[in-house]
Length: 325
Image (cartoon, rainbow, N blue to C red; front, side):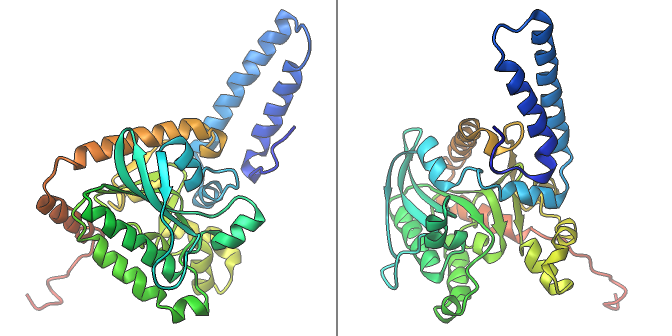
């Protein structure tokens, strides 16, 4: 039976996979049939590898939004141990779009902060599809400050198309709270590791994205704006989102070249939605490795490195002739 969620460019892969499953369901296949199945499995692997090695930016966005892609709650079960969730911002409410709490990673106590989109309609409405409100960013910052007081490293899992853009969020200080997070995260005297696990859109992502080590999954994206938002501004229509995706240069390859991220974490063949367990194992290994490297640094060096890391992002040129030199 074909999966419920198929991306357009994945259709040939699933068709071939279905043919293989039908052949494998036969009882007592002949040696010739076994050889045919073996060749078809090899062909499927090659096709999948070629398709995913040549995704265009808009196809990458589709993969990052795949309904079956592992989210923060999935990684909490597969990567971390003994998670204890912490709720509320002590001011307005508990934003379900951001999860915070204590966890253990390979025996290490950490503070986990991550976006949550929800799986079914009820969860998505509760989480507002991963669009966090000001109280979500206040909650995240309060828990990170608590982690800093207790000397616990912080892990942030980013997966949002952006911060919630509604009137209520603006009235409660959406932009201000994100700005406060940018300022205060830069001063926390504990290691911070940030990973974009799906969508990394706009200030909604950056609000928990100031880290000492910033990584992105292979088929995730990280951008100043979502492709639909960019298309709406430049071409007055979200129909041009694919054109905007190409112009924004926000895929993992682009991000490394531009110095926005430190590392690209490889995904299983066919994307993280194909194999949650393998993706979780890879992510766990990279998180442990990053923390092991950062934990040995004194706080003063950690803060200086973090400051310099973000200061050097972006390149510009000055023409000395225009300045009259």
